[in-house]
Image 1 (spheres, helix red, strand yellow):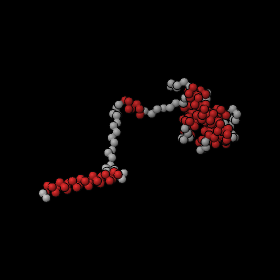
Image 2 (cartoon, one colour):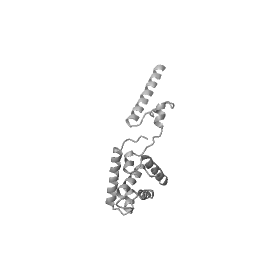
Image 3 (cartoon, one colour):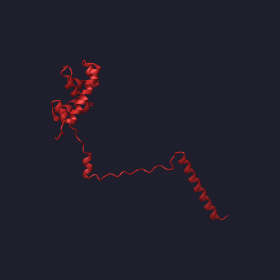
Image 4 (cartoon, one colour):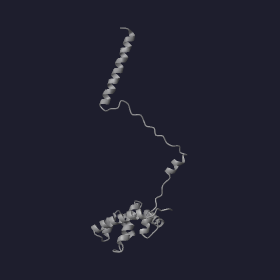
Length: 164
């Protein structure tokens, strides 16, 4: 056999072995090579549309909720920030719920006030647990929370947009 034929046969055998190994690895679910990394194109940092999207959006209290509670969105925001300093884990939803529940039940039970509910939240209790510690039954506490949620949703939907 000529030397060139031996080289061609060796190359053909090597290619066959390589292809066979690759097909076996693929059949077993193993990738033959690691996948190529994806390149994500970013917009130019001086593009005003990109910088505007990164600006933090300040959320204000809905005017309808503030009105229902006899307040203003600015006063609610200020009260929320004060309460948040005392309880960093306090959420806007908890703050609104505490105010709504106090508004709804305060006339029946003078012990149920927004500061009392916020204090309970600060100590790690839920609004329902706090209401029960203030003398409200479990069912009444549950009903009061559901009513407060409904009132907040309705007030937020009914209130005009807040143009500050």
